[in-house]
Image 1 (cartoon, helix red, strand yellow):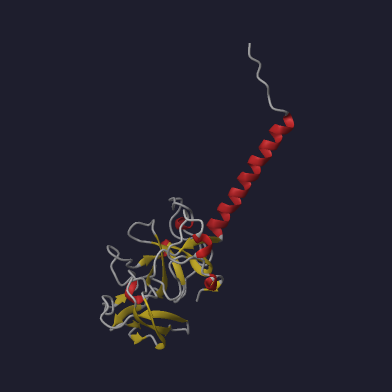
Image 2 (cartoon, rainbow, N blue to C red):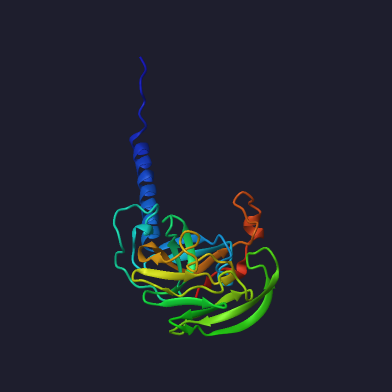
Length: 254
């Protein structure tokens, strides 16, 4: 006959306490992620010169209220937004790509409901008026294309005074001339700051972003917490240090 030996009572209690502590910690982390903050890694160059591939950004979830896309895996608990607030032109926003409602995209908000948006010869027009732009510098970089070439750093000023920098690789870009689009109620028009290397609302949703429903907004990008240059890899521990870009740590996004 085999006799089962039970662990001492204090050992069982200690195990239960550890499990409870871990469960509470996970719950708090989930609540923080859903309600307040979420980190994202920038996967492409479409937001240069303000966000670079390899930037690790903090996104606030409370700016525009919460939708099902605020929750991991976007469960269909409810429709619309809770405590919804309107985003402002110029905000850098993470949203779910409309054509699949799963893929995270990050772009700058250009057009709000009622706006008429168009690009003519590379110049952004809002409601029939060109957005003021001023060249601040001329440098040489790839802009994500893999080929070094001249790029103008252009400062745009949106209605209301919001200023930000964009990349302009010159005339003749595929999206330098677009039809005028009227942004309908409950939708938004987004563009990448790297204008010649961004699939955004200038393209229809089948091949680009199209117009983004209010429900798809996830949150506003606020801060570059950390950054790694190209070549950094989770499976190459030495790149965790060698590929760091300290100059971008703590960069506030405008």
